[in-house]
Length: 314
Image (cartoon, rainbow, N blue to C red; front, side, top):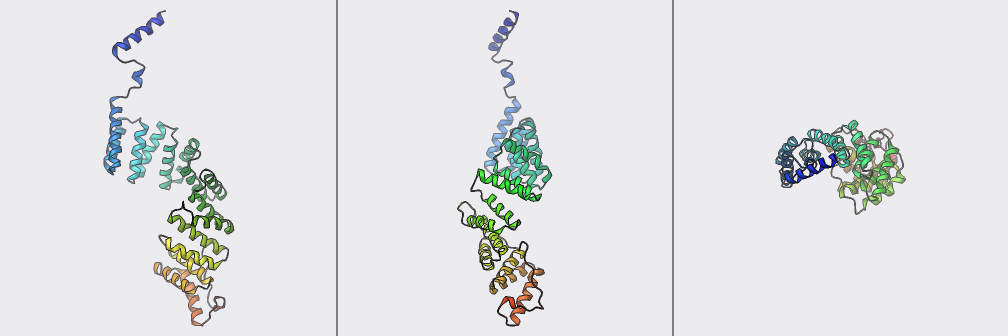
């Protein structure tokens, strides 16, 4: 009876005062309300491209409400956009401490460590992200890359195939599967994948260029030198940047295919980038020996000329 009377009194008092001791726990404090307003102003500043103002507002919000995980997460996102990765990592760590069941925040923390090339620190947040979101494709791509980096080729292949189970059109995964088959000296398995990517409507121009280039390498492994030379030549038209080694690969394939003009052009390009590029110098000497002795077949090159080395993977 006394207990029921106690609760009746409390209920009456709460109605008279306009609040209860229970709902008071859910009511945001003045500082929390200010933080929410600051966060909203920060979103508008970010939308307007004023990342400096957004950082200032969110930093103030984080000081007002240090236990608000969303504020730390939002601040980290702005800091990452400004290239301030180390500071972003501090706030991402705080966000996952406050809300450890947020898979997206765990992924962003893993990605920040990954971009900082702090690979040993990627594993834990990445595992947490995938425990909450097993089908997170970007997290799986990082997982597969790390497996490649650690020479766990079969594990990487399994992860890339897992990505294709989720998204069968994922071009990044298909490209990496083809590259790993080449690494394993399996060009016949890589070539069909690469041919499909080179004309895939879902592939970007850069991905199509990568597919053409790697397909040329696959043809080289198969000793299909004419196809290798032509495919690498096509890739150059889309490839954003060529290195001396890239030009040498085209020169070598073209030399093997007896496309001498293409080979000489590629050698000149390689030596313009790196005048001391030893394999290019060696192949140039071979071609000069052939030219000077008026031999029209590559196979008849002078025995006194040292053979040019094959590019890596060939």
